[in-house]
Image 1 (cartoon, rainbow, N blue to C red):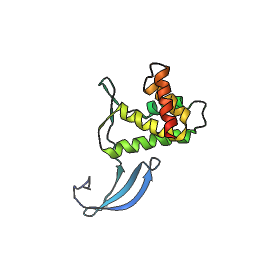
Image 2 (cartoon, helix red, strand yellow):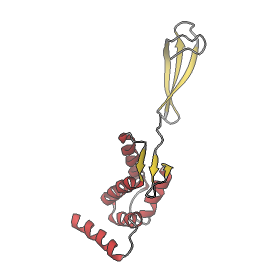
Image 3 (cartoon, rainbow, N blue to C red):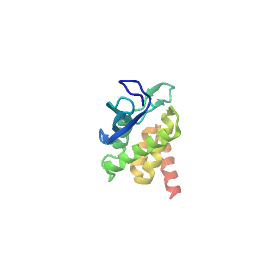
Length: 151
């Protein structure tokens, strides 16, 4: 880290502490050459995620939009808000670990359905009915049969 006063290239860290609810670290530094102190902040670099929709359009990833879809599917079901937020956290973790800058809406939907299938089957079927856009009762029944066959 270069000193902002004398532009010397070597400094030492005098104090470090978390800030912003542990989202960044505040560091007090001291220049080896001029002995002046200054503050720096260290924060995780966030790579913006772009969602590619079915029609080919692109839009920024929106955590709240995903969470709201899951909340609607789990409405009046015994699924806690903590569980729903964990689903979103796990999906975000998977996306970030893939190091891809773009992800298809289809991939996100598949991840949500896999998570809901393990938590609450009714919520899973609700989400799948909107996500897969069931055209009639037969496609809905086919999905239910798949779910029963897996058991």
